Image (cartoon, rainbow, N blue to C red; front, side):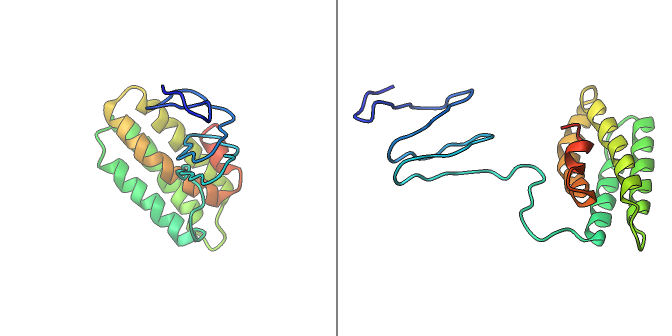
Length: 158
């Protein structure tokens, strides 16, 4: 740490929370729940959060394709057979509920909730489950967001 005219300087990384970052020529503030950066010439970098809306809204066809992609991912995973069968059954039901003239979003959400719960539990005990959960979670959040405004949070227990 060096001393300068602004009275505050940090080199390297800091873990934890840093509040009230003020002054001139701040280069970056990264992390969750940043409120504001005050000063002149600031450059702020922000990563998109999982499930953040970064483009055009999903269509029903997009959602059905995401569910099919997730089903293919699960079929190829090295998960216990019972777990794999259960997840595929629930994904299939969610896809069927979605791929109707008038999608049954409540039924799809219920089945996706079961999928999320099963994959999250599996991720804590099976190495392949950790990899699948990391890949599946953003897909589930996208689909859940399409199902309803609060669905993504509800689905993942947030």
